[in-house]
Image 1: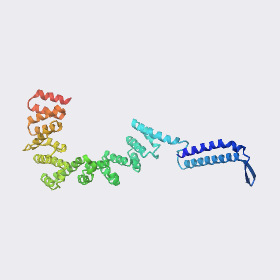
Image 2: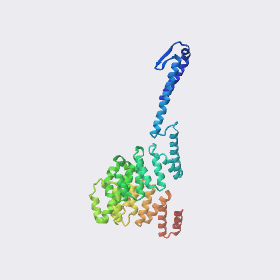
Image 3: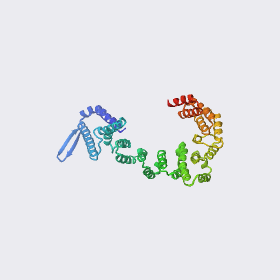
Image 4: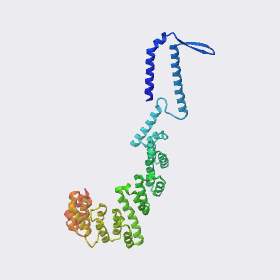
Length: 387
């Protein structure tokens, strides 16, 4: 905007000069300048020319002095911005080289602009190049620098955490995460890495304590992490104190907790692992009286040696309303097979195979045919599963 105003001002002066110049040339008036060395007489036209010349000299002098100061202060953005274009070119070339797999060339280009302002993107790209070249310490230093820039702070923190995890240093990752400020800690990407590290370090009680706070952020992943946390906690109780203590612990939990799918799945899985299939069946059936939950009915595949067929009846009732649910048909087939009801298993699996042709269902049906001495059909199914 300033440049446009200046340009318009110059044009106005030129037009004014062209219009009034001839009048000033023929005008008899003059300026008399008295100095110690003597007096000088200038015509009106000569005085105007001298004024304009003095203005231009001063303007050019100020520009030159400013550029000299900028150069001495370390700025390289002079001579029509040639240096800025070189920086942009180095940044672009670095990204392209990285995408092309020419990591060394990318490293060379990006190293030229380490201290430049690219909102931290140049640092993230350089850290990636250093990582691919095996310079982990250098990459970590660059990530720490990128973490100081608001635009790339989260990405840099995530990269540092992921690097710790890749090196199987989850304890160090947890220490690092615990040192972050609350705003970064509340980011969903950080929370997922946090939960993963707690799982891999078997800190299930800590994970369980944090899950209520993370429930809204995790959304649909909450049940999964609830399952992981409870599995670890229940397994620890069962291994130390036995199945009966596990059952007492379950009954002592708040009713709202015992209604969570992740908690139910973890408890039922532990009962199955302890060989308490009938107890597991009761828990699974009673917790799904209204609608089926894939996280829970998937456990029916593991049920064996139960004294009742409540789980089979429940699956059959659900299939009456959704008879093309392949996963449910497959689950019914596996459960029926586990309970030696090969007729029902064959019926469910055959329908599931027609709808989806999953390899696990084909193999299971082949085993049933083989047990029935139907070797021709068994062989056909085994060949089909190999395709």
